[in-house]
Image 1 (cartoon, helix red, strand yellow):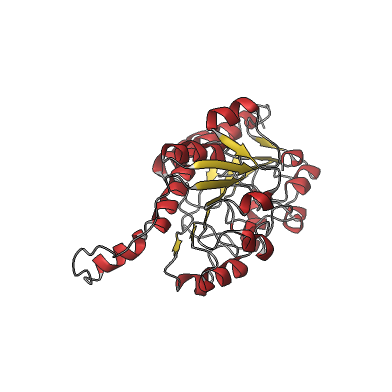
Image 2 (cartoon, helix red, strand yellow; image 1 turned 120 degrees about the vertical axis):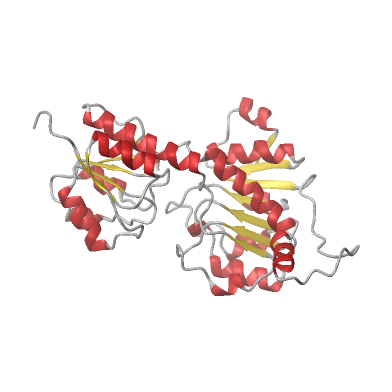
Length: 328
């Protein structure tokens, strides 16, 4: 009806400033508890909303979309990744999907470098010693790590975040190599001083640090499987701030335990928040709770993109960050 506000259901708590603005613009149902909705709650939300605002913890599959009814017209995802949403089925049912690309680029790239340093310089070990009061003083051979300057960095996935990682790595004196679905334009390669490898296997055998920055798709699931992990140098370090499903976590854990890999910095995991307990036991592994984009500035900017996508849709136009199956 003319003048009637769009009905929007938000599945998780968002920064207060985002929730306030959303409530001013739309008829919003906010989530009081900061817990993820279960499957039944998500389906129920889709039946009563014109717009659903989910995030990465909300798995929305074809079966759930089939129960959504006819009211839902837009899924305005709070986040860049949409591998948790069956975009093809949504589009077939006339439901648009939007996301928030570009917002978390710098924050995630910063965290990637932070994890590289944390692993190679053994920062968690030092922190643990200090917090537990076990430090007995400086010693010439204590807590020796390795420099990242002069090392070869391999970037798997050279999109926005991969390129941001490359720029930061160059500032630390690292040699940048990359493998991507499509080779970058020559001007971008030159600016980044990046070497392209058409063969992922050949790149893996030559790098000292691997940064995973590609999305999770059917073609990237377990892209880093046991065979590829074995191609890497015994002292190599893997950092993953993208999606946990890209790595075969069991194979990675085995190689870290046997010393076939030097270490790992992981912000994401193959089974979401269910972290392999054997990973927690390893001193050469740094584990973080999916903090890559966790800055106040970034999360507010994500919310602003969601607002723009919904408002543009409400005004009868195509959301600026519309996701189409051909993009995936």
